[in-house]
Length: 397
Image (cartoon, rainbow, N blue to C red; front, top):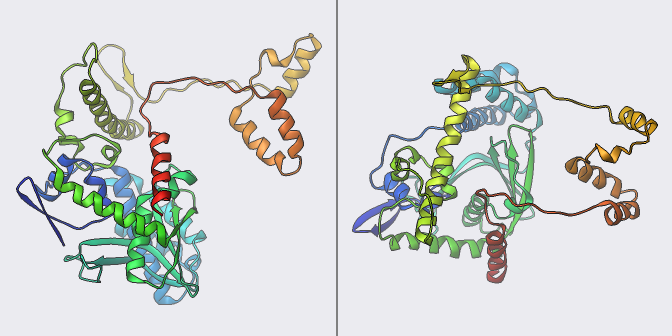
């Protein structure tokens, strides 16, 4: 395994997507690899994901041993696998996990180029295969295929409800790391298809990686690991990693309950405020989900006074557009006075229409589309940074 000395302390680590994520925050890194804090912030979605992965691993093993398609696995076999691998802490989620695994059973097809599932891949500093515990780099591939054309297909199961855009898939570091690992094990493989199978929806989205991209990734990953040795203080550095941090509940930032400053004047104050906001948003998200689960099973929670957290019905009015247009026209009123076009539905409609009548679609855009913009203060991932990263990788390649 890799041995780094950081602030006079030896850090024994195994490079993986999980490590690279933790390495973004010195405090998280210290909790995980030096203090080895056992009190972890447990998320329902994490337990749900582990249960689904382990149940699918058991079922894949059964299907491979019995030489049957996944679709031939019985409902009883699926139920047994889900029951066995779902921890009691999320017993209320059993139905959802069962539905996801059944959807996988019904739709996921094992090809004749199947190599393995839950493939544990571990290599040392010389990029040679070694034991799991002695590894410097390691990862677990959910499902791996390698065809005779020196092409690998990597599938990673995800329980996330969020479907990644193509741009996010193309920049997905975890998929790149898996492709890089496979390249070390199978040097003859020259191209890679990386897929995310969305268990909640029963389909996959895919991206590709080239050997040149993997070489550039190796350089960047090596820099990330070496950068750990430059840590000057075990301080928390808020960022995207807060959303999956195991130690967000003991983070010094969450312990700071001082009120917000009336004014922020300096860049340092601004960064401190933004960091606190990012960490608290991660905690609030988990707290909201847990409270919603309690309310579903019990009742709304009433605080002092008349403030309530609970589910509240809101009336929804739906107008018949065709009849409305007819009635308004009879009164000499244009329907444009009261109706707005749904931008999302219109975008989908134009996409469908464009295949048969592109000229008309172009006319609609030129004569009927008005583009405006509005701003909203919020936290978001900078597209400018993503674009710069993409350009940098292309330059390296």
